[in-house]
Image (cartoon, rainbow, N blue to C red; front, side):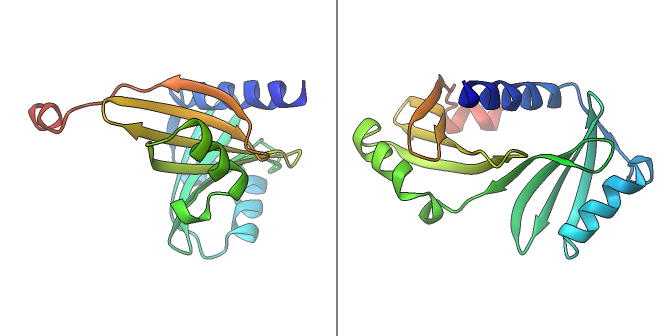
Length: 158
């Protein structure tokens, strides 16, 4: 049940981003900015957005893409960290080997909720078949969505 609630929270946050708007740093509450600056003092290129009363900041930290969502008091709700493929946990690699034979991982994001639940969002592809997959920290597939693939020649025409 806890996994389902966490997953639903993540979907709500991700879905709300489509309705989010970029805001200037000056419009972010002082407590939120203070918490962010304390936790990530050497962040680079922070971009703030607001959706449903929460503040999300996308930024680089130590050369790695990150995102953190805060409530209006400065309490973080969710953290996202882009992982290099070698840093994917062994439990997830085992599931990839078993259930996604021949697939190549193109993106990996570690998601941590405020109650310290870790999940991993991976994009995998094999030929014309591609999926966005959400894993538990134990390597269990929580959700698998087909992903539309675009041929290189179609990208150039856009």
